[in-house]
Length: 261
Picture 1 (tube, one colour):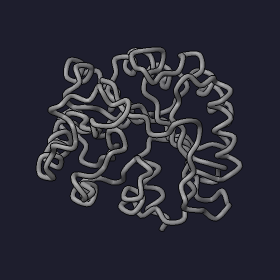
Picture 2 (spheres, helix red, strand yellow):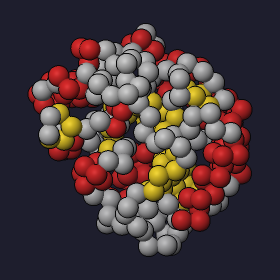
Picture 3 (cartoon, helix red, strand yellow):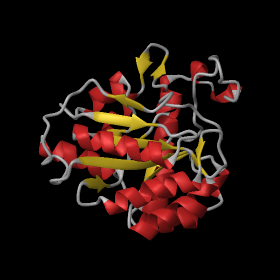
Picture 4 (cartoon, helix red, strand yellow):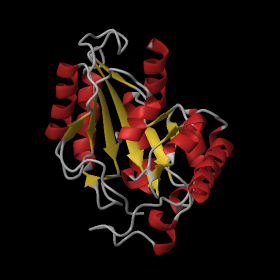
């Protein structure tokens, strides 16, 4: 399923600033969350084996109606048992359809026609499906397309008590998360080289930041895509720099931030 792009180019730093020290990230220079959106076959076939080979755990934001999820639930269950996070990316991935480049949004799942009840029910339905898959009740949410409002109201405030944190960097997500003075950087890789991915990590190290990678396709299956080679180069750099970089699922990092407050 095609989706939004959260960040247009390389990095976007949140307006929240963080005291420059390393104690926040378990005595390391920065934290990195490797997140993957849209429940793609390539995530099971290529990404998870690559993460497992270097001992890292990723966060996979799953669309409950995706064939790559519903037809491969035992494999997602196995991934969760290994420590990978299964995050909520809603049941049907609704986005605002009447925007440039959004022709792919189905009319039935145009967020413009949603009611608040429909949106929150679909999010809760997806959480129930994910709980039936991995047995976990704690979850994080990633908003499709970064679109968070039904009419004039953000749906995040209606579901905030159902989640540990929201992955996105919208003002309402920042408010709901309540992370405080934390520097957060995002990178939405699309056609980037391994060198560019690594440069983002180096910047996070210099800033003592949390860097959230928002991957979609890795070696194909999505219009937003990076090569398997670039992804592998990133993982190897992270593995070689584990003494300075804390790599963990987003939910683990979010709980750590909140636990320090």
